[in-house]
Image (cartoon, rainbow, N blue to C red; front, top):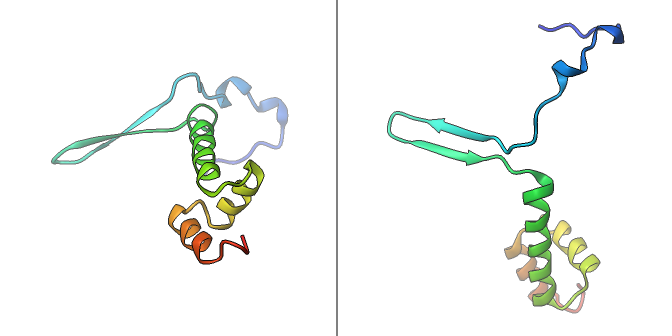
Length: 93
């Protein structure tokens, strides 16, 4: 078990900083095959994908950005749940 140092002078920033300039790749190895999984950068990969999804849903349901984000978060970003609720209760949403 690693003990936390109470003395801030002992902490060396160089040892604690990770290089995040490149996106790491995790490779899962098994006896039959190997599978690579890319680790997404939330600013480069996730945000544009999220904005694209919100834009698609805004066009489909004819609502503004803020309304669509609220609806999507309420239904935990599950497109099927949004669709079912929308067409079952379109006037309430």
